[in-house]
Length: 247
Ligand SMILES: [Zn+2]
Image (tube, rainbow, N blue to C red; front, side):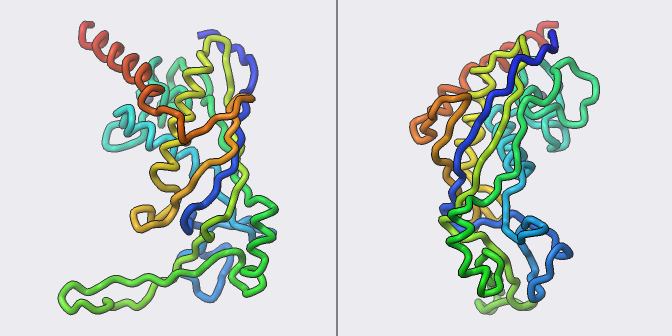
């Protein structure tokens, strides 16, 4: 392919938490009363944010499952082959030699909106730095009471908090940008159907994406049809697999 960069297609929106969400930080960064599991925060302001790597990684893994493009030993897809949109959009995992060109998607860190920041001001004043603290334990199956080891404390950014979503997509001359942008829309919608951050199967990390604009167009993810959008992707992959078997 000819590697001529034509433009960047912008994607913006607002990511709103529908349940408390935890994207983990490091305990060393900020010690708050011996918190077991702090969330990741801006090092200077202490305001929690969602790293671009978390959003990108979640989209990628969901799209790998959706297209069946899983690497060997459960690693991310590194096939580096032409019809694989996972490798084209997110970059082929650990594969150095390929002709796909640079990773197309750029996912920026999602910072808390100023409105949410002021709404959470009360929590900051209480000393919890914009989060709720949740204590969790486990039940000993033999006795039916809380098991040993005591309560573990977890920080979560509370439900209702909003973050600014910013992505940028590199469009090269030979790319089909509609296909690539549809693929990314599938990834974004699947995040809203799945979870973001940790403890998703226990109610954490339910998010919605509002005011989504993809390359200048307003997109309503509620009515966006994943199955319809993924059909040509699956057809291309099936076609390429058939071709490889014939050779
Ligand atoms: Zn691949």
